[in-house]
Amino acid sequence: MAAEHWQREIPINLPFSALMFVCPMIAAFILVYRNHGPGGIKQLLKKSFHMSMKNKIWFVPLFFLMPVITICAHGLIKLMGEPLPDLHFSILTALTFFAVFFIAAICEEIGWQGYVFDILEKRWHALGASIVLGVIWQLWHVIPHLQNHHSPAWILWQCAGSVLLRILIVWFYKNTGKSVLAAAIFHAMNNVCSFLLPNYDSSITLFSIFIVTALAALIVTFLWGSKTLAQFRFMRNSY
Image (cartoon, rainbow, N blue to C red; front, side):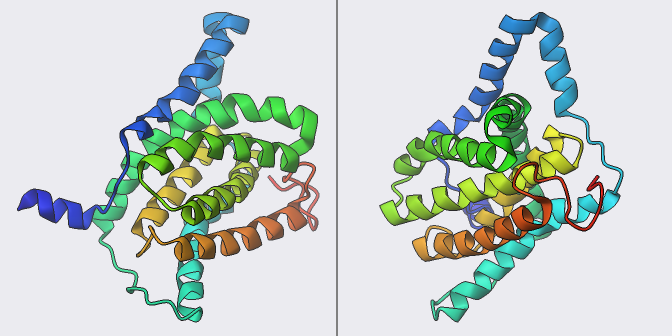
């Protein structure tokens, strides 16, 4: 009975391959160690667990942008006339999700943002590097999606939306002093909100999330600039 209650409260369904979240971190450690030795790994870890921003207002979008995107996507689904249960969850469920997903996110982001992104940015600038990294990130997720028996349409919109999500992750990363920790927090918030959204297994739900995420990414790119994603149009310095 307790197990059934837990399953209702925590409606999470992940395949065994989801445990590959440690791979980006391990790969980054190997490459950094090869090039810079133990000191390089120490520097990467130091970079991964700091957050430096002059304007503390960044904590607001860091924790609340994904809930807003999720609520808007939920509303968009209802506008399309699709049947959908009301948003309903407990604080305990949300906190449990965040704890679990943050561990996975920090492991991924140590590799993605802590190591790979800065290399890509030197060649393609912030927006281009975000899209390239987003595509790599989502190709890496295809196997878990297939193992969960999701439809092709679901996988398409999930991957497309997550490529755009990487733009927002980079936006936070660049505006919090290149904080991998901030990237991991936003990454975890995305996962929390996704799994709390009713009918998450529906391709219509993923399409709605894609539309709202695309709008957010367009606004961010316009206001902070595609070259850096960190130069606000109406201020000299965005952080």
